[in-house]
Length: 85
Image 1 (cartoon, helix red, strand yellow):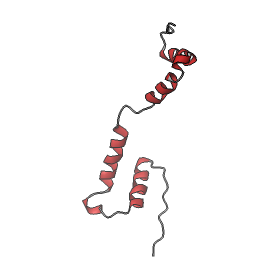
Image 2 (cartoon, one colour):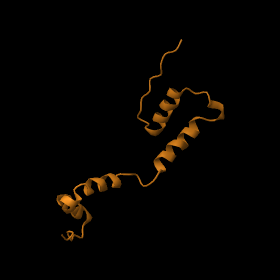
Image 3 (cartoon, helix red, strand yellow):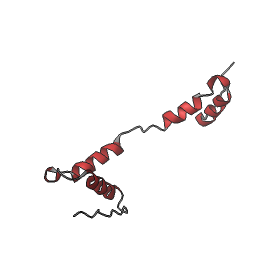
């Protein structure tokens, strides 16, 4: 049996999905195409954390670092500090 001929990749994957031989192929390709092609966003987070946790601030609690990171990434974030004795 011949493969369907189609110039548009989205239509081709749709046609392949109806062919019993390739029933899982479109789902696999959707998963592959959703993978990030760069690690720039995670590198940006590490850069922000390095700016927060400096040599003078190495003893910051994890929750404090998380709150500061959230505030830096999302300026609309509202953090209410916990009350300590």
